[in-house]
Length: 484
Image (cartoon, rainbow, N blue to C red; front, side):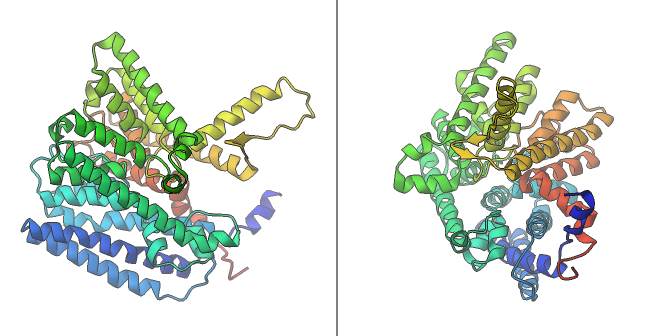
């Protein structure tokens, strides 16, 4: 197909469609935004309660109005990506004013809100221990419903089964049973997410954490977010609390649909899944690499290395050891681990393990082709399933876009004289929605660099391609399907 013929098939988004389904997602956000009101009222933080309540009301009014717009049922892929990206932008922006009630500047409140809804966990606050329980809960709650994904809430309770539902869920197949089953799968994900949260709070409480601490840390762990109520995670409790937290992080980085199927099929389904085994292997390799790095730089407790390895590989971002105090080699190991990330279908960030498995398979094919006849046909398989051209293009495109975004985001930090390795660590952490920090993110960080990290966190959460499509001029200006 020629470039000219491809251009004839490119259609801009239809604004009516974008606004309608954006309204639906805003409606799903409203009850989530209202939950911190209850905590604020319990803590007699009436100013915060009023702000969260007003935001929830505005989301209901705005979302309800937009959802009534008449629009076609069929939705394009670029429209679905734009709707999702805009929803996360609005979710972050809507929380700025409520978080400012705790004394934050507008930019710092935007940073914390963005870090929350994108399940990143980076923070520019000098300390969190001086902030109110309402603020600490709100940050963790933002991560919990940001990790659940705004689209899952809409699919589970608001959207009726349709082609638009399928596209918003990220399903591109036309199988009719998937159209009718999308809502059911969203509810499966929600059920696993809530069950993990409830079980995690109970286990962490039994392990020795205070009830409120157990709640906010599990909200952050299940969502692989990493916001803590303490400047030092060791203040949470004795070692069993960190062990429970590590277990929750691993489940948070494992496909929720797979976990649901494992309930009925048995736990064997989990340890025979290729992605899950790759996740555990990634944690083990990161752990071994950290231990090896410290063999040259000084002692590191094995429990600390194990926890840090799981935190990085699952992109949760809880840190029991300050990253800035680690040797350069250990920081590089964590950069690679964060960039790989967790399983598809989980709350983990990074490029995702499945895409790396696809790339590894492609490399294996390249080596194999050097030893077979030129006319031989070799097809790529991953986990027993043949990969088609679209899947291969998507994996290569996303990895390339991620690398370019990291390099372009790294450049401003270098121009401002930030240490290169620490700057790269921070950028990869933001793009991978991990939250581990090399000490760069803080109140003194230049405003422009804070904005760069905010953009990286959003790109990491909605995926780089979706963010690029949002800002791509041809997404908004050009022929639509109605004009063709």
